Image 1 (tube, rainbow, N blue to C red):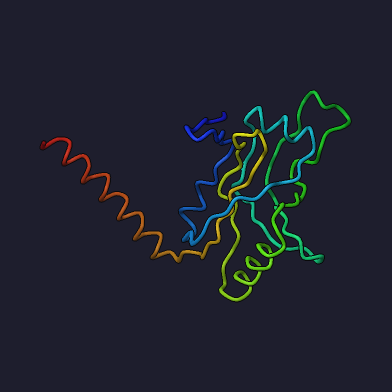
Image 2: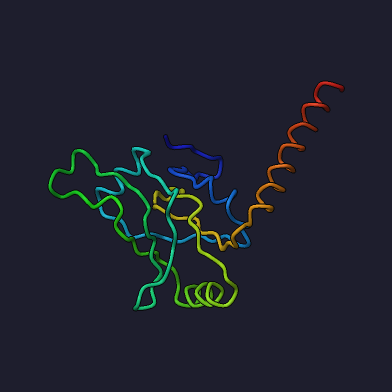
Amino acid sequence: MVKKRDDGRKTVAENRKARHNYFIEDRLEAGVMLAGSEVKSLRDGHSNLADAYAGANREGGLWLYNAYIPEYKQANRENHEPRRPRKLLLHKREIAKLLAEVQRGGMTLVPLAIYFNDKGRAKVELGVAKGKKLHDKRESDKARDWQREKGRLMRDKG
């Protein structure tokens, strides 16, 4: 299912677990190199980012690992591998800055969403994130539940 937002962005997949498991410090948009059958599968709204992460390879580029884009049924023998590594397209300075942050600060690069921008190009929203401990997860759950309860109380009372 593809969700269209008012800014022209059509979201294909969201990593909702990432907001539960990580503190998202910074966000950035990256292009992604895809095969034709992958683009068609994404346009059909099929993708999963649950176990995906971004990291560097030996040559210094940034890659998206373990993102699931299923095979496109009509592609026959020209199909792609569903969990293959995909190259992320960023400027060299941006890559160097991100890799320095990851190595120095104990941060992780987590894909938050795959979407098509207003020009129809597939993009990945990356988050520079720090992992939450169990007590942090409980605290954020408690705060979210309190906000929900507060909204209910306000709606019922006035």
